[in-house]
Length: 120
Image (cartoon, rainbow, N blue to C red; front, top):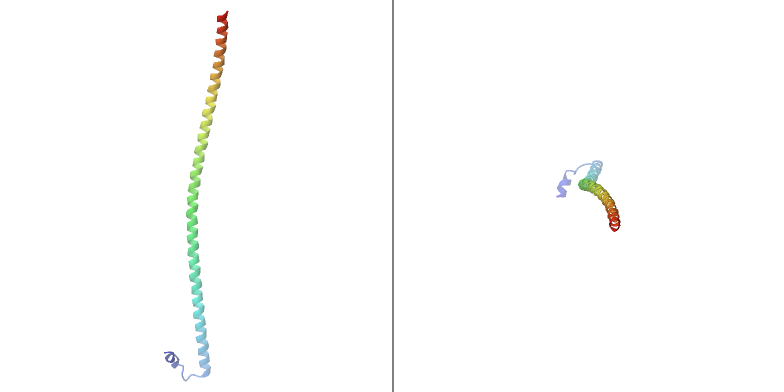
């Protein structure tokens, strides 16, 4: 079959044949270069898609972490409020204990005084 492709070249001068050969070589070289560039383009497109997926994945992870962080901040706020309430309740109860302790001491003194009066 290649003889049919070459048949049209019969009767051409050596100079023209040389030029045709150079052009065919250049075409082959350009085809190879085009194939290489096409492969590079496909490789770069694949890498770009992979990077896009990675970025999207990291965005999703970031969103999840932000929600988790917000939830933890709210939990901390709630715990701080509970701590303040418990601390306040403790102060109130300590106050009540001090008042009752004072009343107890006063009652003990009254009892001692009354016992002393009874003994007289």
